[in-house]
Length: 127
Image (tube, rainbow, N blue to C red):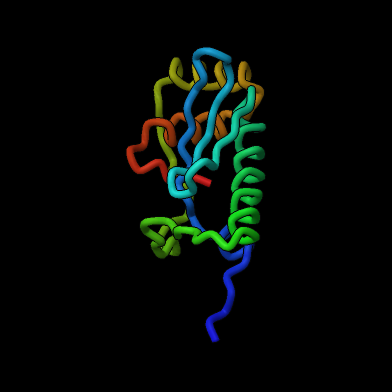
């Protein structure tokens, strides 16, 4: 008998998260392209990430309850070769600009840089 996949199983998969600034309302919108209709919004990047994780859990839970098929991410790769860290040198003026913009958003510079990188990364692998 085939083992039934759980919410936790699907939550552990690396679904791609796309993040967009909302030019009309302000704040940000996030969507999981592999989970149709799974999207959320928030005023800050920190709240957006929390909301996105909650939206993903609720979407998966509802799909399992309804008996709907849930697609797994297109490419589930072995991440053991990646530490999630790298060092980068930048001009002091860019560093200052990043710190200022992160403070305006109410998030750490690290979170702000992740947002900028994920926004401009064509593969958009994220949380």
